Image (cartoon, rainbow, N blue to C red):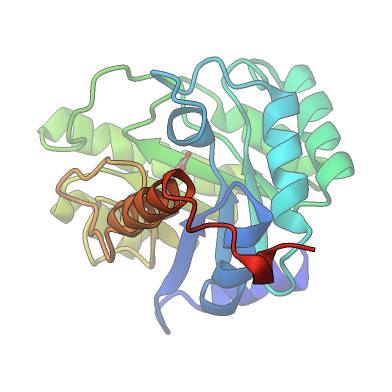
Length: 257
Ligand code: KIV
């Protein structure tokens, strides 16, 4: 296990783990100063490409975004989402995870939980690939958004999945939109850190989509805190530019050669 991952695991029960998503170098260079882990999430498909879900994202697309992210980070642990359809069985998962790591030099891959895919995690970990698990609301497999773990059966199922993923060798696990008591229970039970998104303060760390907290994506469900409305500033600047071009106020002599 690489040093950065050992350090991340040690943070459990000491201090919260700070994580965000990034798809490009300009954002990554800022995140690198304040985060522990950067995820090149498959949310890039909705956020940057305007797709209606994450299902059509290709391996090549996520690899290109990760190369850009990687170019500007020095200290963060870099994790890459494996797109839907790229890890359907152990052989395929191994081939594609190796391709992602070889081409991007990332530290780990993330896999959303579906049926028995803890077995895929086990296979990757045995092949020395670091894996982050993901349970709860898993957009690659659940089309309709719903809070997870709010019935006895689903709470029991989530705890079972979390245990299997830890046993398979994952170094941490994302808990997405899981009811507070059950995410607390999972966090207390596991030895590996839990990273919550809409899953309460009891998780060992938090992750959100950077474009959401900046107010750039226009997506603000209850679990997203909008720290700034950057869209407003962009609009103001573009409006001013447009006006100045139309009025011939731009460019001035100092902008010309
Ligand atoms: O794709 C993504 O951005 C994610 C999250 C955990 C934020 O999977």
